[in-house]
Length: 278
Image (cartoon, rainbow, N blue to C red; front, top):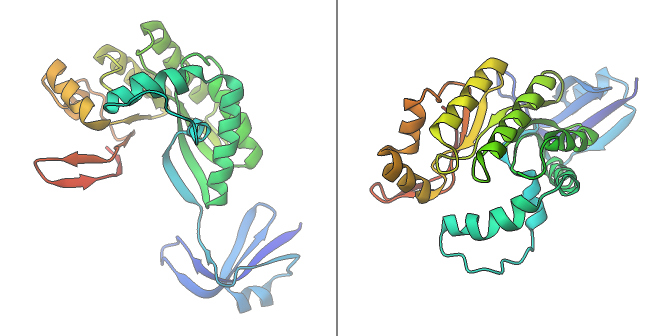
């Protein structure tokens, strides 16, 4: 079995001691890390087939991206030919009609491969992707999975189910998630239930997504408080903030992963951005 040894790096480990080894080495045999220690110790203990000199570099465990839109890489340099007046204008006048509604499986494959390759190059080896392509289902998540498998990336893939196109399309999105999660329970690529927001999904639809996630045991990911628009929409329509609505319908459980955008809370005069497990 051939081996690869990374030598002379600043090693940051994630074991119980959270060690930092200033002149450290990592020895890999096949697809397994078999030793982490000082460069001298590893050189003395193992036969080195391929050597990588990491002098001046930090060697650490792969990073995790807990919310990614792989297809988004396709929009880099894309001209915006309409005047965007607000967040909802950005969605309704540009992002939905010019990006997500036009995605087909060929575009999805290209975006998945390019974006995941970029992730690997920056040290991200595990990611959670959120795909919305309402006219590319069924089968869109399988397309992404095939591309990520080429790189050996660990990923959780989800389809952002929403009723914004139609109730029927929303149901198709839920089936896309459920079928993929059920068929990918093991291995590097797995599935997760996903919905969009309270302004594109009815409470009944959200309850259905929750029930499917419970049945499959796959968890749910979603955007929460997607801009001030969602907060205002929910307060006007339901007399509750989004998180209060989710709580009321029994949606919030320990398996819900929420992504918060950059939000300015006027009353607190604070700006925050975070990912959290509810």
